[in-house]
Image 1 (cartoon, rainbow, N blue to C red):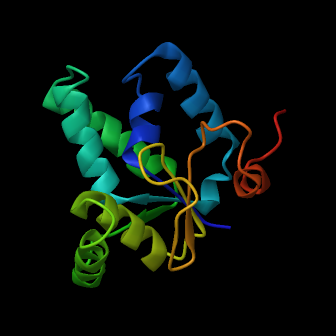
Image 2 (image 1 turned 90 degrees about the horizontal axis):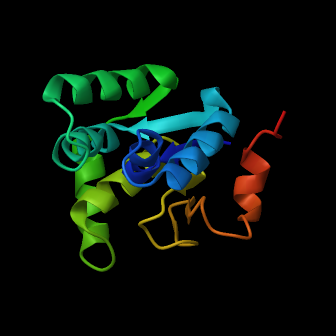
Image 3 (image 1 turned 180 degrees about the vertical axis):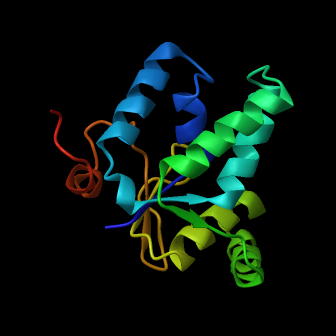
Length: 150
């Protein structure tokens, strides 16, 4: 099962916000089967901006962080013209254009889930279910994706 990550998951793992959220994000990422994780390119761009503006990092440090995440997983989901047009359609009724780009890129990449704290938990679009990985009790689909704690 392929799963995409939203910006907030990587931002928390990078320490943006509180230590509790960072530890939870890192645990989730470590339990995901690496080969099944997709990172939309839009997420890396948003992460760069967030690390510089909110995280107080230099552009060089933010670039290093996005390079780390780019290399950590086997698949990136590009923002193609088809993805952008589908996102524009979705943004007309439900999401910001940038969240819609992430969701559409995840769908285009064949993901069944998108982990996001910011989007509507449980929303399904083109076969992709948005899951808030910090919600308790944990979503059964997320439980099926995560590898057991060693």
